[in-house]
Image (cartoon, rainbow, N blue to C red; front, top):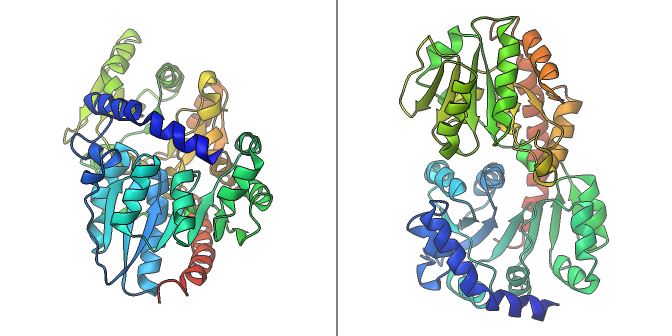
Length: 427
């Protein structure tokens, strides 16, 4: 099966190159750095050969942000090390530009396609000493090359669903060969720990979901519209997908019956849809503004549509109640859910629809701690929001306190396992 995988990935390599190039044209890839994914000459190796290189691979924003406290912890406990972080998405690279400024020994690159010759060249040039894969990033060519070179491998915040496990067990010998290559597995839930124990007998632990450990410096968060957000009654619909804006506008109209001054702020997941959302607002005869970067919100708008990247936290800081999107659309049932953790850490009461497959475990934790609530229709959402907004924008400090305490415990337990793992590897 491994041979077949290698042949297939090599065979479709030109097709994958074309797909990435087309994505670049559609501005879904970095206009210059997309070549890091497909050409060894653009791997852009920056390496201090006197240091051990620890490689973390995290696919997107959530995974990337979750490992930053771990990298900080490793830096504090070990010397003569540097880090390589690879990610896949354009959005994660944009976040990396800002977040990694505080580290002098961390490099960010795009993850190359898991094609054998590309991965071999990546290893030969970067020469990693230890590798951490985050969440569900299981790439056979990478894993087997690390195993061949006797490079210690760890799987962090591992997540294997019932569906994924059944797929792996179609080829049980291959699955066991892949997963037995890991020297340490830290799982995001007990279900994954149970599945991994059937594939790998080595050092499997559940310490909590590391996406809870990301630290947010609330004092550093600034919003040009701070005065407006403090003085006005509003709620936030974050990371909405096509079809959910109608849901939000219907909720707004119900809220208007109770609060004439209510403002609804919509932050769509994909901002290239802002004009179509504005047209939808016009159909509802609502006063709407597309809010571009560095613009202020006037007092005469009912709906504000965010048209900039990376600003959600600046609204979470002031919002009392947040609806998180990609959760009400039946067709997205198996890929539903957006990350609610930053909203929780900033003290927001969170509402979501029934389809949160991608963040099922996180939402279970939030619901258990009375931070999130599933809603099935606009009546339920509007009823909750009416109650929340009775006390004008007064936030419940217990929400952020609860989630931050959970995150700190998870970080402490996770770092204990990682430091023990690294002890003999980077001295």
